[in-house]
Length: 105
Image (tube, rainbow, N blue to C red; front, side):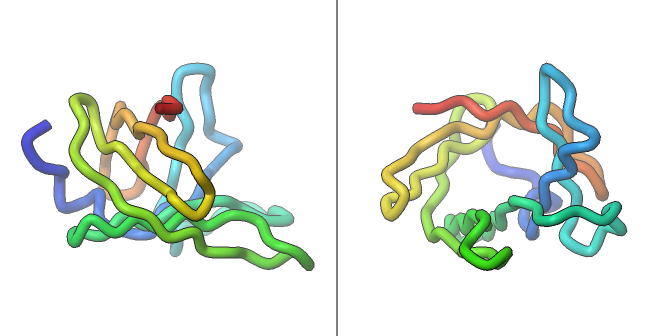
């Protein structure tokens, strides 16, 4: 991948009901999800900023800031605060769905 498609740059929320053994499915944050106790997600910005949204105390959400860079099959993500790096392999991207495979690095 030479550059990420512009449709990638948004806030994505995990639609775990749609996951398959091969891929995790994410939908835009304004998607009409079924009721759930909480959902993880992330935001990818064109300036190479990556924000992971994870569960926090009292049913809240916490933002974990990081960066992304191009990788052979998608993007590589570095979250220094969480001491975690991984690659998001982009398997499919449409206007309302992102299918990825996550690989630890």
